[in-house]
Structures are given as structure tokens and as C-alpha cells.
Amino acid sequence: MKPIRIVTYNMLKGRSLVKKTNILPHINELMLGINPDILVLQEAPGRLLTETSHAGSLHELLPYSFLGMNALTKRGEHGNAVFSKIPLHETKNQDLSRVRYARRGLISCHTKPKNFKQNIHLFCTHLDLLQKARFEQIDFIIELINKTVDPATPAILCGDFNDWNQKLDRLIRQKFEQENLSYTGKLLKTYPSIKPLLPLDRIYLKNLDLVNIEVPKEAAWKTLSDHLPLIADFLPLS
Figure (tube, rainbow, N blue to C red):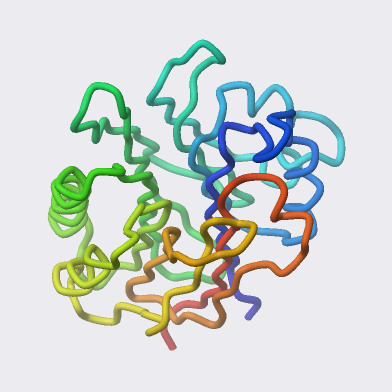
């Protein structure tokens, strides 16, 4: 069976790190090379759908999508987004904001890849810069997962955790129902993109077999967002 590929990426509102120009066409081209089955984005601009809806585009590759807009600025709205080759069901965006000036959200949905016997519950987020707020947000998320998802059902928690000191990582592994939680041991560094020092972006898999996890090595990624994408391939539990 071919593994399912999921990618999480903070795209910096679609503006380049250096020149602040529109990077959506470049992200589209590079992401097509990665060929994800599920793509999770943070700081995704509201214009994302209209600017990627053309022949050979990301939206053509991943026709099922959901945008959870959390913030409105002078340049427009932005938030989290999910694009998928597989239909998404019961999509929902919840407000996780703890401070007025930093709007945060959580997308939840479920999907069922071909040859999988069970649905996969997907939770995508972008946590706060303040540690106290991050702890409150992850407590809410894990409580939600443990209440709404059967312990034996596959689940994915992913996104930009802003967890520079890795204190949240320990908490997640303690609280996110220990059974069959895939964990790589060494978290991969994704920030800053020019010279990654911190593992801010994460993909946690529960009741799924992790086949591979990596950060793309192409130099072009370093000049787009301030984050690098994180890629994980997985299969059903054997």
C-alpha cells in the first residue's frame, strides 16, 4: 500500500521573507513537487483559493479544501487551511485566541483514505507566541481530542506549535492518549528557514504507522516563508 503524505507549512501570509512579494505561485510549484495527499497551512491568506484555482495548480491537485480564517488585517484575512486529495468531512474552525492582538484557531475534520478501514481525525492549529497561552490552547485541544475521538481511532495533530523550548512536546506526549502515538524522538528543525534552529512545526500521529518524516532540502524553500515545510508519510497500523 502506498503511504499517505501529509505536509504542514506556515506560509507567512503568502508574502516572501525577504522582498515581501507574492510567493503563492512559487509555493504552488514547489508543493506540486512534494505531492502531498493532505496539506495543512498556517498563516494562509484568504486569497489562497482564488489565486491557486487554475490548471496545474495546487487546488487542482488537492480539490477538497477548508479555510478557517482567524484574523483580519489591512492586507486581508488569514488563518489555517487544509487542502486534500481525499474528501474532508465535518470541517470546523474553532477560536483558540487568548489575547486580542493574536488571533488563533483550530481546524478539525475527518477523512478516509482509500484502503483505510477507519476515518482519520485531523486537527490543525497555530499556537500562541506566549507560553501561558500555548499551554491553555494545547490543554483545550487535547481535551477535545480525547472527548470526541475514540481512543482506538487514528488521529493527527499538526501545525505550528511555537514551542521553542519543547515544553509542549512533553505535555502532548503525556496527555495525548499514549496508545500507539507515533513519535520520532528527535524533532526536526524548521525555523528559521534560512538556518533552522528550532522545531516549531510538528506532526503527531496516533494509531498510525509513521513511515518517514523529513524537511525538504531544496534551497528555494529558504527564501519563501520564515518556516520550512514538514513532511510525514504514514500507513494504517499493521
